[in-house]
Length: 281
Figure (tube, rainbow, N blue to C red):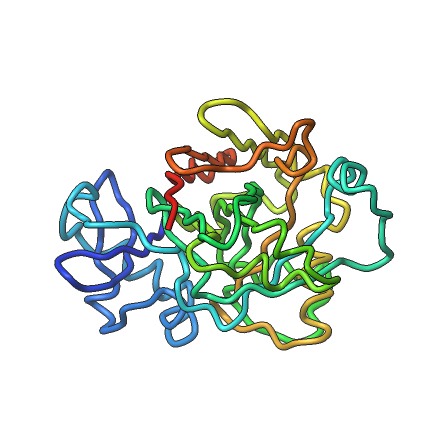
């Protein structure tokens, strides 16, 4: 099942996409946000409601896509999680995952603009796969982690590179408004096999910039869930962004940064294509 968050007729909601139609689950549950629904009702109830409900309108009738989960309690991002990216940054593999935080306000939706702020010209793409938590927990064992997943989506962890490198802390460069694209849909866990290998590709103006498969991850998705849940209690709707492969713009020769008028796409097998124009603020 594919779940989307959207705006329509001046209101925010979320729903299930069925044969190019949308079941407006937010209207049925009296909730505007998918994260709130996962916390309040749970994934099973959401899917059951979607399965027995008719579409309310065509997908083409929404006004805009919003970030798949616009209201996560936490966005936990893994850095340096593909060997090729570790090598191009001239870093060393670490014994534990490198984790940094994003804030919800830094996100944007499918087909919405990734914004280049006036403070920098070093806006970089980072195609990634996001995991949305469906069942919360603390100290989740790796062999139990898959059962805690609601689903998966494409993510572009857009980074303002000079701000990221002001100090050893990456937070500023990872949290400019409307730089983290998330979408187009949450593909629920039952659509993806537990050990299935997904292919990730990032394109800038049609040119392939990144290409990798999930079996190339240094720290697997279950490992990331187990590690993150060791230091914080994961809640339904939380997002874990699993890391970007090699090929980022900052490490190319010469560097390639996104500019006003560019179009960036992140495609993941079975998850679809996340497409965003780039707009100077």
